[in-house]
Length: 85
Image (tube, rainbow, N blue to C red; front, side, top):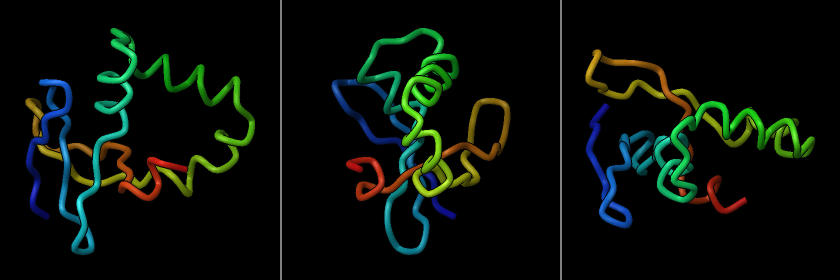
């Protein structure tokens, strides 16, 4: 699987080519859009506050192998179709 970096507002968003389309790391997108320093907590709070989001999370987020500073990790990703839901 090919992994690259995209830039949005001058910030890095990790992405991976999966099934011939680009998938983006959800935590990176949330960090750029919210300037949150605790992205994991922010996403948990979003899911807790929005029962529909929480119920459909498995259809939005797909764990993919992404290269990180600590090595390859499974990170929740979404394609552009799932991000706009």
